[in-house]
Image (cartoon, rainbow over all chains, first blue to last red; front, side):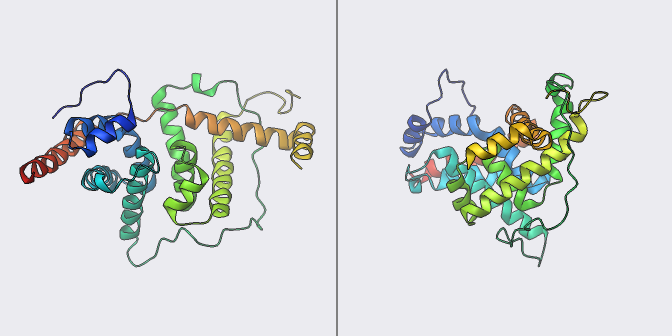
Length: 206
Length: 60
């Protein structure tokens, strides 16, 4: 079955049809979300093979449990949750006996952090090709610890709310906020080294 | 509290740069569309889904 292009994507309409047994409607949903789910899976698992498994499992489970989808959240949020659980299970398996806990005590930042403080060049996205930019951003995300990376992906990339993120990961709202802040600051550090404006007074903009 | 913080950020060069570049970090990530899935990965996904859908149809 091949996906068809739809002029206007109406998630709730497609979900209703899919729940009623319309396979083409489910196909449209998969086609619409598969790239985002794959990106999420790749970033969490950091492994192409695992990411593919997660992608498949997420949509297969979604199809299997469509009846259980109550509609109290967006379908996309629901499938993101399924994908995140699958991805975290992959991470746990790969670490063997070591438990991957997302509710570890958060480092309060007692250590001294040497911050990169430099303005960025204007519009860095225009300086690099799409592929180069993707590489730079992916590399930076890869350096994040799994719990920070996952929160960042859910909040800033998949745009789940703080509450949805907390519920998906089984952690508290303050933990989500704290980890998100630390993820953003860590990424800022990495990207500043790449995008800092060169050859100028750092504070010339003030 | 928020006004006090905003005032400080506008007056403190270090904090201004950190807040500004943090915002830009978020913008850069939001601006990037997800990449295309490799064709073989996509093919395997659809094969698995079609198998599932066919199984459900035969049960109905």
